[in-house]
Image 1 (cartoon, rainbow, N blue to C red):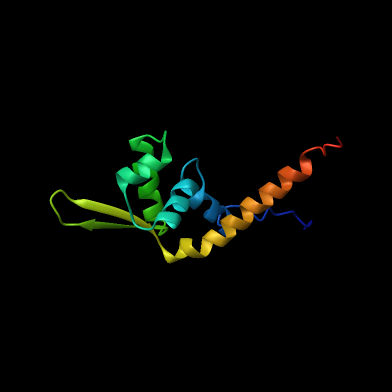
Image 2: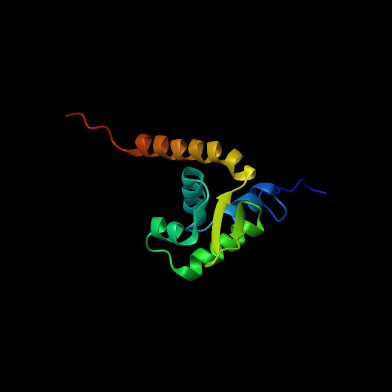
Length: 117
């Protein structure tokens, strides 16, 4: 039997699962916002995200909650108050996201031609 090359990012790959949990246009922005602001109400998240639709924000928050990345707390007040906050899993992810952002900045700086003037 010949040695086959097996991609590490196949079904069941932990990296692929992580990327699915935080992937998409809005999820990282939502997580970073909640990381900076702490427990935040839905309308405040929407205001910070700018052009996100209600449908997409609700879907993203529900998926993040389902993956254990966001905690939703409902307060039985009139009117009902709901707040979202990151979980400990995301707190440990923030330094990784910061490193990833620094990596991209370094990559961008390396690909920009030097100005010799």
